[in-house]
Amino acid sequence: MKTITEIGGPTSWMGPDLQDRDEWILDLTGSHRQELLDALKGVEDAGLDFLEITRENFPLPTVGPLLLSMLDDLLEGRGFVLLRGVPIEGLSERQIELMYWGMGLYVGICLPQGAEGTDLFAHVRDEGVDRHANYGGGLLNRHSGALPFHTDTSDIVGLLCIRPAMRGGTSTIVSAVAVHDEIVRRRPDLAAVMYEPWWFDRKRGDGPDSFAQCPMYAVNDSGKLFAFYGPDLYKTAQRGEHVPNLRDEQWEAMALIDEINGSREYQLHMDFQPGEIQFINNYLVMHSRTAYEDYPNPDQRRDLIRLWLTLDQDLDIPEEFNERGLKTRSSAFAT
Image 1 (spheres, rainbow, N blue to C red):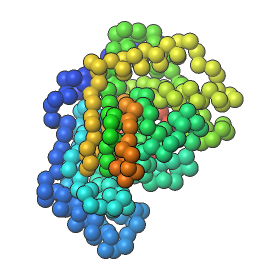
Image 2: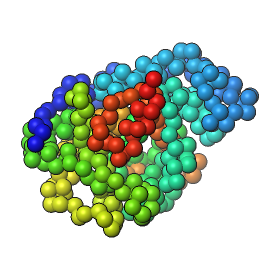
Image 3: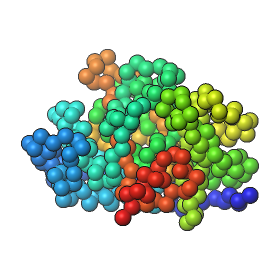
């Protein structure tokens, strides 16, 4: 059996140590904001749709390098960045989406979302959906309840705040590496279980293609740790005819990781404000959300826009993550 050891390093952090520090925050200047508005005007004047936007026709001579500079922190550092000051005031929803899409092109390649894989964005807002209904359709972004700690199925996820909730809706993140290392110290037997393939729900209906296997943790040949965690995905995969029942030790492993994720000593909290974007590396950081209550006025209700990004470089994702579909996607864009 392969020996599982602690990883440590800058990707392993404790939330309270960073909560009141600002090195994970990037603030746009007035000239940055004007540059974004000018780029938006350019694509609107040209009548361009989302898939027609490129770095060339959405020029960001100073904001672009700033966005690219985030990759060092996202890939080799803490795994998250909060960008503040995106100029969304007075813009329509479509204008905000166009600007966000153009910004995303400077970070990576935008991926489709939704149950059919045809949506360019996902609006994270309460549409009255029962969080337990048809999870296979990917409805967790459409209710106001709390979300468990999880990772998304993209290299990077961006969340742009248009409007916060009246109460609640706090984003909470933890270092997947710090959680891993605590499990190795506390229960190495369960750490080994987490390195095994786990059946998960790919949210593609009820056929055999809807289910695949991926470990919670894997290490590449360079010793870098990658995480994938979706407790609801493991549970809803149980409906698959060929999917075996979760073993006792798997339930115990999920309970332990949820216990550690729920500990304040690991958590960092963010209460989003309009014009803020949280970027997260899904291989290094797990995220959750508290339940929230909206304003009575529909025009004031909480709304975030989720953007999924894959990076145009080979991240050397472990072979064990093949079924997750990201190794091929990232490697394909390597130059």
